[in-house]
Length: 467
Image (cartoon, rainbow, N blue to C red; front, side, top):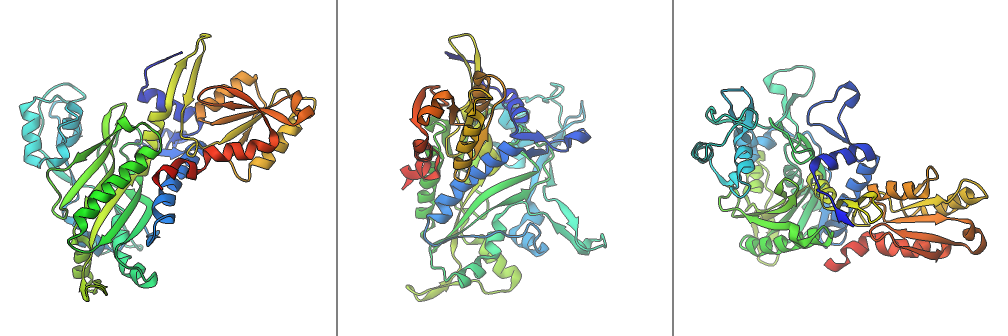
């Protein structure tokens, strides 16, 4: 058995053909850079979110989840600094008139350059010094860099004037900060404690690209961890370790991850790092971990005029807590799972097998039940097994085509187990249990199916190494 090259084109084609991701508004010719999650993609995405939620909300002491509204008071974004300075560095090619992000040009030219740490002037000098060409026409003739605000603006009410401007949130974090006083009070929380949220955010990207890696509408899993001033760097190191362990526990390959520690920090941070994953187009950020000091809470206290200090009963004093933030892109996480799992195998018999080696706990379908033939009572017995398993596992029933073709269909969507019902099943209540990765088949009793499947597909089995 040998493997063929893994490309983004093959992964995109599989997503569309197998029900993971579809182009947005496709029947109308599509809307550029928008994507809809299909039936299998929605399940896989929800399984990723459940793995995060279980570990960092359910299993953690003093960890609370919120679901803040997408629309927030405009003053929130003034306090956070987004109105004044949330922008992308853009430049135009004078030859073909197309517009590009300067940092993307640099990172595509040299992935290790890390343009996110450069100023606008440094980016322009780097592009000029290395004669980076236009990706479209190949010429090197760019305008200077301009800043373009990334927030989507809309209007509340029926009158479209400046007084009614409101924004779609460009990040989830501010929803956690403005709800910090309410959570503190209602849940009687004590430091250190965390507020987490999974939700949509919107950025008016000029150049959305690389499938679902960079989109205008995306989803984040975020955690804000509130600590005493002076303890933030200790907790930053702890969270840095915890988050990488979570990623590695998913089984996508330890060697595919690395840290990128920021040398140049945002004005509100005193430490920051990215967890990067090796995509087919290079190492890219999937999660950011930041020590944000007390900047955000202090700004909201200043702009709202409300006292949001924490009274520390042990120290007998009040202060604005410091914050450690972890923010992971759900869509980027989804893409990293798919890129790691995809394999196209040339089998010894000359056939080609496309298989997704998804972690069993994340797989959208846990098992597929198949009658060997559509007669002699086998479909009825197979449906009886489906009806028993479906309450605990997402289960497919498939009776169309040869058994070999059905196995291949399930391999291509990452189903860990296939259960074949044959004539022997009617005699001794045993079935053939086929394992996706090894393609090995074992004879097991129907009564043992639930235990055998559960032991390998539960989130506990995936995350128990993090206990």
